Amino acid sequence: MNTKFFTLLVSFFITISIFSQNQLNDYKYIIVPKKYDFLKEKDQYQLNSLTQFLFNKYGFEAYMEGEDYPQDLSMNRCSALTTDVLKDSGLFKTKLTIELKDCNGNMVFTSKIGESREKEYATAYNLALRDAFESVKAQNYKYEPNEKMVSKTTPIASSNKETAAEIEKLKKEIKTLKEEKQTEVVEIKKEVAETKPVVEEKVVAVTDDKINTEEPTVLYAQKIENGYQLVDMTPKVVYKIKKTGQENLFLVEGENAIIYKKGDSWFYEFNTDGGVMQKELNIKF
Image (tube, rainbow, N blue to C red; front, side):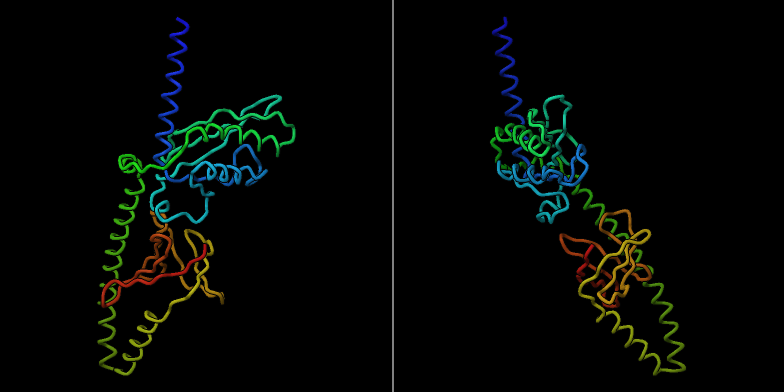
């Protein structure tokens, strides 16, 4: 009876190990936070850097939170797992556990408890983390794209659709506002043409120059209420932008335009008589 129970127990853990390995192989990236909750400072004792190093050592592609991510990761955060390291209470031992969660917060992998009896924190945390990583090493990770998993765990795709829908909605609103303003401008120009036609030509030239030539090279984002102001090297405020319900999508204050991020680039989009125009901006946040 005991032998049968032991055999079932071993089979259970082998099944769990294979299942964890298959799950891990579905994910291409690991995101490491800059700070763990049980520590007071970012990357204290270089524990976060060590986490990133060890994941890379065992075949993963790990990035520190906030780094420049690859384009496919920026477009789909669900291709990455987020790691965390937890400290267990122990009187004479330092105990650390590694957790990996998907983009929906679901637990995908939990390591064994890594232990160290060293008294010095820097050494104890280092050794305990390396001990916990033995569980990661045992998975023999190798990335294998899984289309079913991607389609199942990519809520960012729907977010992109919502963003696109929001952009289209804003474009329509901008177009409506532009048409209303164009009607007002036509009436004003008509009046000017009847009285001072020379003034009309000057107004048009100045307006065209403003649209076509104002293109700052580098803009620096300064936080203000409900958004940012973008200033150049002078420093001169070039744009004031307001937050919307969508991430990385802003309304330009005082203009019929929007600024949004596509991939790794920022774009300023506005309406002209010739249709919708856009130009790329170099914004530093």
